[in-house]
Image (cartoon, rainbow, N blue to C red; front, top):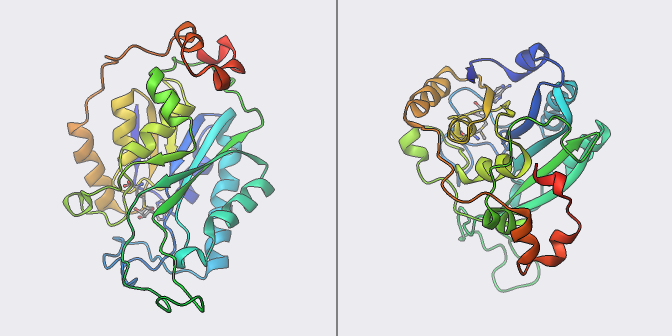
Length: 283
Ligand SMILES: C[S@@+](CC[C@H](N)C(=O)[O-])C[C@H]1O[C@@H](n2cnc3c(N)ncnc32)[C@H](O)[C@@H]1O
């Protein structure tokens, strides 16, 4: 089941069933004045990305507060966010703070190394220690859980390969940003690799994934490919239509690689980190 709802998530979330969401994978607007920002000239279709910072944080807090009862025990919330003004507006820290106040428990903090910055011409005071500029070629993926670190609802199975598990369980992820934004007609998409890693690392097949800021539907497309259920909210009708178009071409993937095998992992060179894992973690 893949559902794209042209709805404000503040209206849609309260209508979800309690404990029905196993993983949230999302990227909210970054509040960087997209469209008027000198590095980001294309605005969103409807959303105005220039709230007062405190109002913006309060708005996000209200959304995640409404979400709490909807998440299953052991469910994960993955939030992809970039800080504003080269880190001078630390949005990621503000999110961690309010998530803890809302009783979400921090699980991990992954750094997504995009190896790219919008522009390197803003040098600050070039060559001087008085006021150097620090462009940030990375974003954050903040992961939280509800009540219990371990998933309680055993639906489906793990679809991670051994290599994916080994590579992705290091909290520094290297992959490029989405390059097809013009083609799809959305100014701030994440690449499929981001929800793919989060969803495979933190949920079983047949789980239900929510993206409250669905945009051009990247999380939806990945869910279709990975055999997850998906619910997405998006205020722009145009972005919902783009998502429906993308979904027509997304096919469920066959699991052609050998799935992770606990005995093989124990025999491999990765004895140290694996030692603490239990067989049940792989069921
Ligand atoms: C950063 S984009 C998400 C892009 C998405 N990850 C993708 O790859 O296509 C944030 C999206 O949130 C949407 N949005 C803003 N406020 C919203 C709200 N209250 N409810 C639902 N969607 C909202 C915007 O229209 C925008 O498309």
